Image: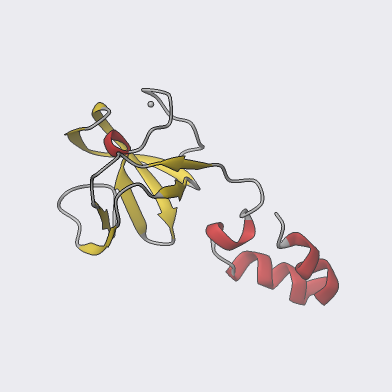
Length: 114
């Protein structure tokens, strides 16, 4: 609407670079990612991709804060915070509709997922 960098330097050279390549976006950027509150009183479906056609992988309890590592266009959803086709990547392979996350914006607040 990296705090893990230190560990890669400790490993040194190619091993450290490999850790950064293989590590998740969630792990590599944990210190730089902002969290946002989800809609109050709503249990939020977490899906395997940016759309309602993707499998539900878990359900978040109401009143949760989620990190947004990147965002992607997908299925348009009408939710607590309006209508949006933006999906928030909250972990590797886990997305929630931005229409249920209070980002304070109707647009992108993080970079697009690659």
